[in-house]
Each structure stands twice: as structure tokens, then as C-alpha cells.
Image (cartoon, rainbow, N blue to C red; front, side, top):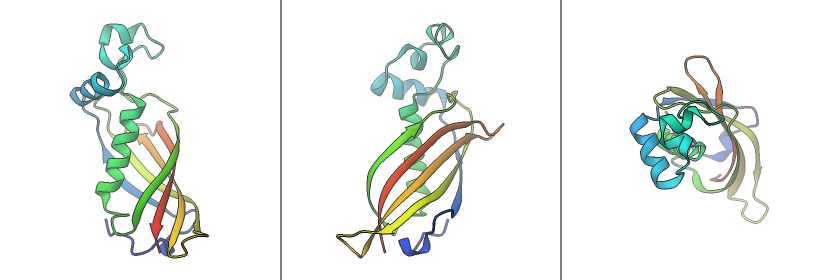
Length: 147
């Protein structure tokens, strides 16, 4: 993907398809064991008796992988200065080994009041299953970007 040269290249409504990724079962189990050790992320039998009815990836893992995928895409590599928080929603649980696609949508962009060489952007990360388009993550992240 061609990196953006400036936050000024962004406008509300502009979107970028960033391809996809997969969270392999072994990584789902490893992440959960270390960072989110809940039974429905770790154990098939326990997961069958959970609200999900099956083993599912941690939403935190899904979000972390999404941020990593965005950074590795290179889209913001020349302009991303820092993050400033995010609002996260997981409409549907993600199963291990389920391919997903990612789209980035510019929701808002403005020049920083205190640093006019910097922009503050609200970027929506939409992650959906490749098979049927079920949304598994809807995150609204704040980014500080070079202008």
C-alpha cells in the first residue's frame, strides 16, 4: 500500500481496504493464556458451556491484531505520530482460523489547535469475516498525524 504523505490527504468518508488476516488457533490460545485467561478463550469444553457456545478469540487479541495489521499495511507509516485512545465494540465473536478483512474509514479530521503541523484524526477500523461479512470489530481510534 502506498503510504500517505500527509494528514491533509485525508477527508471524512475516505476509506481504505487493507486486506485481511487470520488469528490461528494456537495464537488465540497463547494470547488468551497470557493476557485474557477466560475459559471461553482457552478451553473447548468450557467454551461449549459459555454464552458463545464455542471457543472464540479474545476481543483484545482481535483489536491488537487489527492495530498491527494497520501499522504493517504501511498506509500511515510516514505520518502516524501516536494514538490517543479508542472505543471498541465486538458485535460478533471471532472464531480461531476465521479469515477477516479490514477497512479503515476516516470519520473526522482536524488540525490540532495547539500544534498546527499536526492533525487529530478519528479513524474507524472495521473488521469483518471474509466468508460472510459479519462484523467482528468496530473500533474508533484517535490518531495524531503529521500534516
